[in-house]
Amino acid sequence: NESGVNNTYYRVNNGEWAVYVNPFFLNFSNIYMIEFYSVDNAGNTENVTSASSKVDVVPPVTHIIIDDQGWHILVSFWATDDMSGVDHICYQIDGGAWQTGWGGFVLTSDGTHIIKFYSVDKAGNVEDVQQETINPPEPGKVLYVGGSGPGNYTRIQDAIDNASDGDTVFVFDDLSPYFENVMIVHKSITLLGENRDTVIIDTNGSGCPIFLESSYVSISGFTVQNSGDGHDNAGISIE
Image 1 (spheres, rainbow, N blue to C red):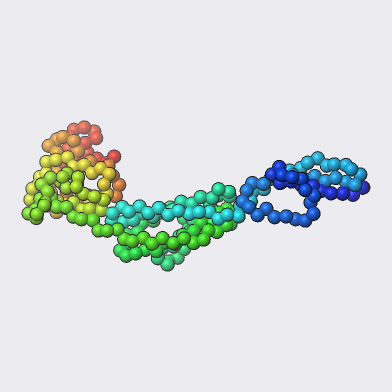
Image 2 (cartoon, rainbow, N blue to C red; image 1 turned 45 degrees about the vertical axis):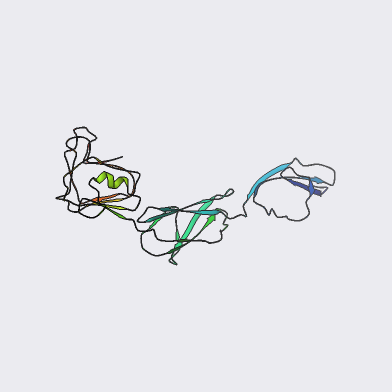
């Protein structure tokens, strides 16, 4: 421009117009719209030009989820960042090596565990390290079916109905065969027979011997037989 620039003007997010003198900082997390134009010494005014910028100076926030399944603990994480988004999550188990990942892990060993974790967003902001102390799950009780002990059950289903997550239902063979339809619904338990050849669940041709609608269930030590004729009457039916 032959006359030279007189002033450059700018405004941020529809604020007041100001004369540009020195570089300035955008110190808060936000999406900024910056508009600007110049006026020369002859009074000619440039058309307004705009540019947008996303500034993220706030680190993400990480949350830990502890799911006690009875005989083990499932640990997972989720993190939030309203501006640039979460890039990754880091975690450490009992002072070991730092690991990166979005998924969870399972704690099965006894004793207290120290979990440290933090997240980094896509702008490079690093969250302060958080720490969670996780105590081992309480051992489950054992409910007995058959046998001669006090309080033993005569039906497998009765023991299952009175079991809680992490418990074990142990079935002796002295009352075998057990003529019943066993259902495990929304319980994480262990169902254990004394001997797979002698502990028999027999439905007399009606339904399936074992119906399962739950996660983290262990079944072993049984013979199942004489399920119904329907296509869904398997020895063990899993929903």
